[in-house]
Length: 249
Image (cartoon, rainbow, N blue to C red):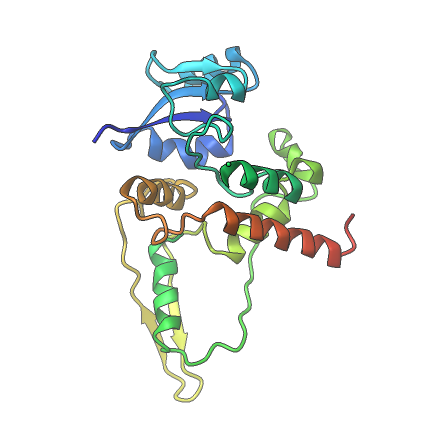
């Protein structure tokens, strides 16, 4: 089977989410081939192609529309009637996400699989409540310049949509976790084994992103947590409700 041809939007020559999470898997994946890049300008896309050592045949575009018109790509544009592999958040807000859903109509690491198995098998009994503690690496009072956009809610990527929502649905995680079960009745502490897979030693951010790409290519969309558009839009509605209840306009 020929590799899935990808037109990738937003892979710059410096540091970015696409560089950390998407490129490590896609660059060496036998089931995918990056055939085009789209950045804010053709020059920026050309610089990224050179910086990341992509084939000289990789096409450079400065607009999503030009990329969508390329007949050699399979994953860039809804309006062109092509398949789209889009990460969360889908868009900057609910309105834009619902628009994408309308156009589209005309999940997990070994550690998270283990946790799900423990809960589903009733090993810890009936779950009445859960508490999650986390410390974000980004989104502080002082931020690096290339991440400044995350402090403007209008851009769509912020501590709520990125950090809180990814961890609410546990889509990004470190495989090197130690899971312990404590029995309050007996006082016994049990350590659970987490099985590793071929992506467990990859760069942190690219592990689950790679699993999603692999699941998509293998046709295991549901098993690997690749959401349908309707489910992703539901998450956008959840975020809007959080904003509303927090009094954020």
